Length: 315
Length: 50
Image (cartoon, rainbow over all chains, first blue to last red):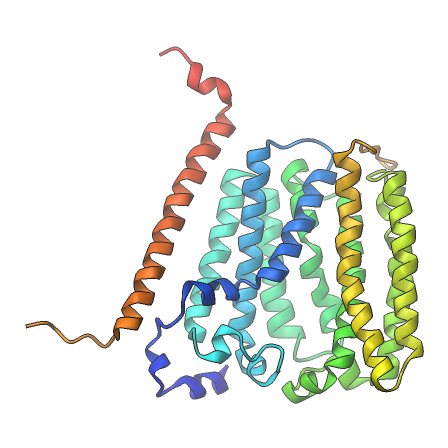
């Protein structure tokens, strides 16, 4: 933070008010937000029970804004390391378009607003989960774990795994095994997804002083961990079927997608040198995004086509 | 005599656009709360006898 303040001080930007609406929109991390909205929608659709479509849409809007608030708070706090990483140097705060204090105010306002809107208009249980998610991402992950431990994205990944639980809670008013299964899928997916990125962006993270696993434990250990988490992810993807949330269509999709994920993880494990190793990491990173989309889309399609109804195995 | 402003015309244009965006968001929130209130009350609220 201090480095960024010193960088900005004395420039025209120091007076603030330079950011465009587009810069503020970029603070919301719109690509992350779209995945959050999608997984929250699946949580709403998969949950036992119904919700008025308007209230469902309001809940999604609040969850999207809450996710955006987390992004803005992350960009406020991480502006100094964002400035030295190629992937993030053009973000609005390190670029000088928005002052750190402006990003902080924007993030806090949206965080409070999204939680209040979700609580007042839809469900206080879902609002409490949203508030915890924002706190977890901004404080536990960004401020505490990210710069201190190579387990940063393992524990911090929980923040990205909460949205389907929030969506589910807007319908049921609580947390149960079905929503925990959706949480676990994203939670176990996060480490191989980010470590695949970190393997070929290792230099960037090292320059910024972030103790990502490849920087601290080396690429070989990271490849082993990617494979272990992928081996755990494949069976966890079947949990919704075992709990009665999903049916045969989803189960087949989970089997095919799980096998493909393991294939790409094996490629990363085997190819350790040169361009082939980088290519394998990029392929796993790209496929992991597609995997998450498809596995959740399978639930959506199954429910949309009436191929499965909620049949709880426990309780 | 016009008072000097520390903001350039470009700054003022950006400020105006942000003010318009904020006004639209506030108007949207008002509509959101109004419609949600009606939805939560139920459709029959509009048909009640006074």
